Length: 432
Image: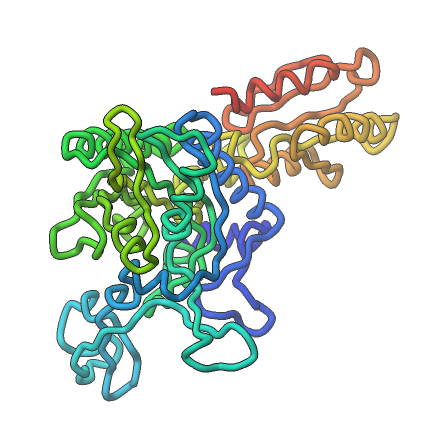
């Protein structure tokens, strides 16, 4: 993990937030390469979950919601962690993460556990009082549930159907850490899949979404041996869950949740109907009946997925008798798709390279590098995961062809410049 963290900072992927002030605990900023990688992870999820499915629609709900939302959802009452304080060093810990009854830092005596709500509280308007209290959302799901009627009333939806969104969530975690694995501000990719309230339908769609979501990580480069399914025990289920299975990834610190697939039943629609007084039912034409659908929820963390992709792609090998670091990212996720190198700084090569750059920039994120030996330039791009290197050389100036180098194999092929865009499109593989 340390090697990856160092690489991320050194190459502009992820920086500690507020770094010039010493940082702020477990908050991170995505740099120029990191923001592209993160955007590609979200785009990969959105393509798979929304754009390529006729049964799923997307929304983008507000972070700030009416405070009654969180009463209805149960988060005000149930979204808590048991905390203890050390009477000696005054540090605070989650009671359920401790292996003994003594402080893990100094061995001091601990207080009795008390419940601590994880939601961030703030105020709307100029007066800070209970009437103006609002919360930063701890999950994106509630923005979907409170818009259920809006979607049903305005879109031609028929069960089963899903509503998906990607957005920021906030949890006042007491023990964040492990780089971007657990942070107080994070981004989620969640989808609520509405089905008929029937146990057989629930079982069918639960297994379907477990298989789909597990396969998505493998499709984009995660080693399946580094993934596992772990059903939740009854005593660890969330307050809304009828059953949850986590897709876990083998991080350097051990197995950790990558995504959860939950059976939420009609809990959320029931509660919001009760607290709002609105009719949150679905009318089924075939049976001429109204009911509140049940829900299957695949909920993934953008940052955790990004971390897993980085960890599984990180490699060190030797090329041409030189050690190199390489991120073997799936080309669809790579922040830079191709880098363009003029072999020499003369003979019209830089000018020709700039022409190729301008042509490819219309369709891809590409880089330009003419500093140092060609081998060193290759290495710089390998360690940020750039899958293709395009070299303008002496032959280019004669026949308008270039070499296309492959990051993983280092094999080079020659193509006409006017075919480059189509070649890259096929090799990147978004159509798969």
